[in-house]
Length: 292
Ligand SMILES: O=C(O)CCC(=O)C(=O)O
Ligand SMILES: [Fe+2]
Image (tube, rainbow, N blue to C red):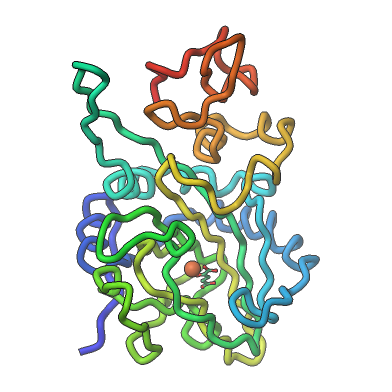
């Protein structure tokens, strides 16, 4: 029997389905108004974005635009929603006991959003190679989850126009087993819905065999806060642009620290919370004890 894409609306449901299938659909995560705004914000920019030149992975009939949070505020609510962050936290932030001398401390890392990309698949684009998004972290499978992807449909996603193809259950495979197209299902969804997949779940952008239907999605990749981020926000955004972002979004983009002692900046001889660079924390803001 072909695997089915399952729906969740709460973090508890999403966690349960992701544990089992490695992929879950969240219908109507964006309100009609948010969808309209994000389309108004991003589609004109996509019209000016050239197709890529990489025939192998990124696609030559696919357009990709990064720095999403610089261009729209309409994804902020979904990016900070309970269903996204609580689900991600379950997989990415397990506490770990550590010794500091004779003190036993349970430390909990934070999460960071890595890639923020609007991806537009045009007619004629072939299938993207099936892959695991956590390959960038050299994650070993089966094992822990280092990353989770959330793809928002900004247009309807149909099998014909290149809906992402996913292999439910493949997050449990080892690193030797090759993914095959016959094992995939299309992550079909209506505009405004989203699909989350674990970093270990095989997937790839679908082939767009339609005559004139452009498939537009926006993806956020969230990962363990102590790993390097896929998109380099520190260089992609200026400090002035970062200061314009809502506090929770800039924290998720890496302008925050992860316990213990990850991501500090030196400030007056202290290992300080990076938010001091944005003028957010009074004084040096010693990293130890910073509430994350
Ligand atoms: O566009 C898609 O549907 C998937 C894209 C993707 O998986 C990627 O670029 O890593
Ligand atoms: Fe991917």
